[in-house]
Image (cartoon, rainbow, N blue to C red):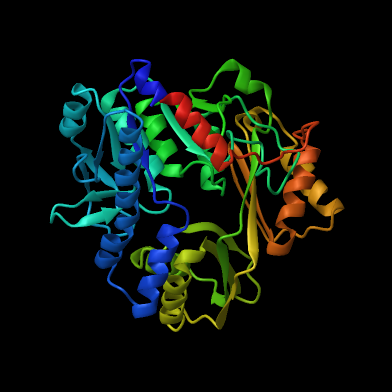
Length: 400
């Protein structure tokens, strides 16, 4: 309301309140263990529609003209992939029309419609993607994304209390952190921002403090070797044992997984011994059932002996554009983990990322010791601060 009163055109994209989406998924689970994905999208989109209506009412109650729009009313057209749809186009005529009437436009994030006019959802964190897409389409000056922390940190401050808040971070570094488990921004939102050069300001919903700007790389960013450390405990590791070391076997495995819509993250193949080898890979825990069904089905076809699944793993990733020109990062990381008795189960690298898989119980220890080893520790300890209900009411009355 204050931003609008200052003369700005404002579009607000909201997600569902609290645990609403999880509660809706649980309700579906009480009815069936195999719900239609179309009906799940219909169900899950309800959370955002409740939020936009309530926020629009709240703004109107303090004298700020507002109107709520669902995803399809806001012009989001997607493909037909229910529960994980991708945006095909965005028609902003309705949004622009409402802005011309001096209204704040409150849009339901995370949703759109496909060519059959069915409601689709964009996957977890999809409201971030919705917001960046609107910012790009409207050529907005800035896309502010409010979360429960006041910006992007060098690590999750709840796991690593001495993490430092970053004033600015490049699209590439943020993209790697998001894909490696940093939950502050959805990866697809950062991809959108980089593609359309949308400047994102990640900040706290509970204070007026400056947050972190996600933008193109600057000279200042090149000074740091490691920008941040992310961890992800949601992945699982499959190991297929006794695989014949023959041409085309790996292709059969990963083609079958891709055909069943399983996205594979890290792949490890052991050295062949007596004509047999082991192949390991990691994937999202959400794809566990699909991956298990796929491997069980193709195991006889590839003449493998057996497979096992480790659900108690964590991926820990060091990210930084400075890694490209700084030798010794891997050596220091491996030495640090070894000195702290943390065993490495798998390794993956890119020019600006080094990821290791460790035992899930050692994830927090791995993040903290690496954070210290690469001189990322802050002098102060992170403390969560949120406004009380009374403070929020006082701010609203001041805005009135």
